[in-house]
Length: 146
Ligand code: SF4
Image (cartoon, rainbow, N blue to C red; front, side, top):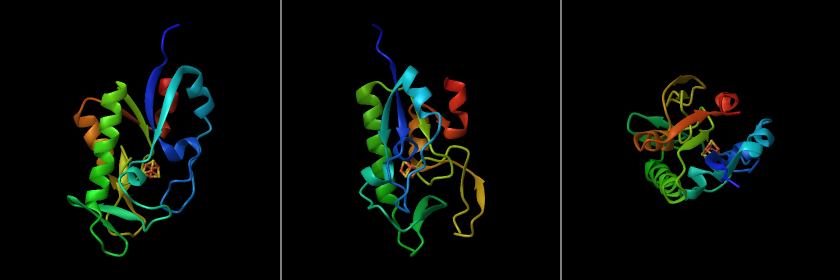
C-alpha cells in the first residue's frame, strides 16, 4: 500500500483547544481530508512556548506584540522553526494553516493595532514554511486538496 501524503495542519482546525481564547476551530472537511492524507496537527504558538489561553498578539512591522504591549516575537519564531523542523523530518510538503492568525495566516492578518481590522499579510510560521518550499493553503482552500 502506498503511504498517504502527510500534511501539517493547524491544530485548532482538527479540534484541539489551542487558540488564544482556549477554543478550537474544528473544520467540517477534516474527515474528508483524513480519507486522503495523514494529518500532522501542530500549533506553533503552543509549541513556541505560549500558554493557552493567552493574551492575543498581532504582528506590528517586524515584531509580534501582545495586547499588553509585550514583545512576544521570540515565541512566534520558535514555533515557526519547530514547524519547519517537523516538515523536514517527516518530509512534509504541504501545510493547511488557519488564516488570520499571526502565526498561521496566509492571506490576511490583524492590522497590528488591535482594532479588529484585517490587512493583507502572512503569519510568522506561514512565511518561514513558504520560504522553505512548503505550499501553504488556508482552511478556505481545503477543497482544492480533496
Ligand atoms: S497558532 Fe495556528 S494552530 Fe495555534 S491556535 Fe493559532 S491558528 Fe491555531
